[in-house]
Image (cartoon, rainbow, N blue to C red; front, side, top):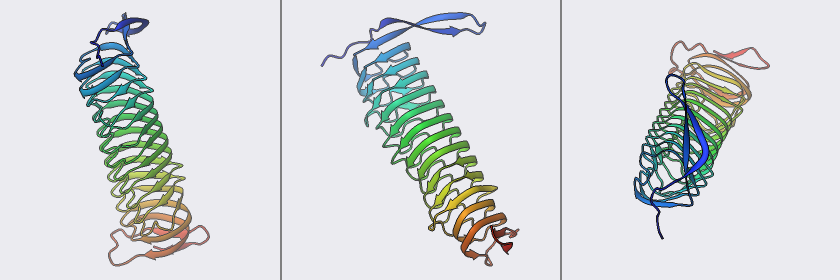
Amino acid sequence: MRFLPFSPAKTGQPNVRRNKNKEQTIITMETIKNTEFEGERPLFASHDIRLDHVTIHAGESALKECSDVKANNCRFEGKYPFWHNDGFVVKNCLFTEGARAALWYSRGLEMSDTLVEAPKMFREMDGIRLKNVRIPNAQETLWMCRNVELHQVELEHADYLFLHSENIRINHYRQQGNYSFQYCKNVEIRNAVIDSKDAFWNTEDVTVYDSELTGEYLGWHSRRLRLVNCKISGTQPLCYAHDLVLENCTMADDADLAFEYSTVEATINSAVHSVKNPRSGHITALSYGEIILDEHIKAPADCVITTFNTDKIAE
């Protein structure tokens, strides 16, 4: 098989840029079509290029230090293809397992209609938009990223997803994988199904709407975690939380020993298996299987626990 050198043909679709004086500069994008590359850095430091039905075979850093790249119907097999990039659009592409750690240290990614089989995607990036993307091998993905938007994204085997990331907006989302969203800040999630042990640990300012949250030890050590119209399942949820809010949520029968040492304001439209030693706040539910307030409770130890049909039943 013959691998062609970088010799793109010009296309008639220009980019328009403005310099610091707001003067327009028209940049003509160059197209590389029906071409294959291999080895190290075949397109290093390329700018204003369009890739159409291009295959990047085994090798490293195919598009390192590039800017304004558009890739459509491409296949990426080599490692580290997009590092230190500024502005790139990826559509209808495939990242095979060999394309591990594909997008790191970059800014301004838009990815859609793409299958990512490679692990360890997206590290230390600013400005990520994913739409209709599936990542079946998503462990250690989206670390230390900022300004992230996900829509219709599905991730599996996603252990340690979203570590130390911030400014995240997610809608219509499905995830399986443990230890997700740890140490994240400023997160909004809607219409999600999240199956994750130890999710949302040590987070700040996270709000989840209309979602299913499955997995033990949910939200420990979080600050200002807010759950609205969510279904919660898994043992010992929401312990050691500060300023926790639940609005119109339900809890499955396995969500026992909830709220230990948390400050909480909660309305729960279901029975609660058991509550243990909340520090302060108010909890209202349909009923409780057990309320545990023992000698180990921590000050101020004044949480008011009620049902919808009765006055205070525990404090």
